[in-house]
Length: 472
Image: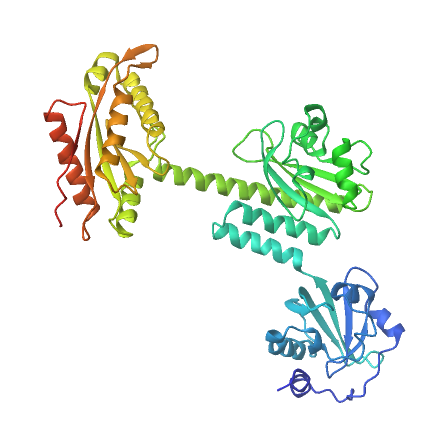
């Protein structure tokens, strides 16, 4: 059933015929004014009889392209049924006037999310129509996406992109960025509508020039900075902004909850030379608070991931993460995979002589040395105590694995200065290869462990290759 037929069938009204005429302009003015809300007047059949300037601007149409057309022409096809049902409800006077978010089609064919409210004036003899109230919903939709993404633990950049787009929809013609990870001279990264890095502070200027940028001043003062014109900007910034038709800049510092000082900023460039109104400042402040939430959530997730995967003493991978990565590697196939099981020689005497504090520092120094002497892509982990392991993907030849083992034995055997004390320890290594299908990571590690203790029995400070692990 067509949109118009649905509407006529569900809300017939004897006072209007299909030949209804536009309501008098004076009657229209009783209902709405020409402001930021769009207003559209429909007859009982759903034909547009009047649209104010705000409604036309919202969808990009002229009056000639709108008057006399059925409302269904402006509704995205998948929502025709929803629109017909909503119109039927609007045709009946009701206590509540709850707007509905719908997808309308702009003059250029693009989808536009619009908040649509409506009220019936069919019983008013001067009007005899249904009046729709339209308001752009793109900004709120971006905010809804932001909060949905926060709940879904979406990446930080995705969260910030939703906020940036939300501001852009509120401030027409503006270019917007949220720049973050301030290091005292510039930002490490920025999420932006279409601004070049120079206009977000992600590209550093000369020291003196950088200090007078609105974002640097916002960060250092903790207050909103407003450049109602660009006359005081450093020449490179002013030139880049003017080339893009931008005439003013506002910068809001964003407090990152886990730091004492702002380390991010909302940067807004506008094509008009003007200061922000109070409404602008209030909106920017809300966006800044939302960005703080995104930074806090991202930081919390990083802390949780680190706690789950990193050894708290040495800063390298922990036992659980090593086992997880080994299991994933073996699931993809055993070809070209070696495991090195490492144990320090002589660690207990050092620990007993100099105390556990120095022993912990020694373990950290050893972990750092191991990481610096494996191949890119190898995973070094602390399994517990003075035991370490290295996961070596892509190792086919035995000589390659033994070469890695020899290098690690040599670097650990060198004297280490720890807290002003020179200490010596050694390293024994057991090597096992995943050469057969059906192996478990337990059987592979067990083989490497047994090879390690054979190496220790042979005199320590050496490596031993395991026999092929047993299928279990």
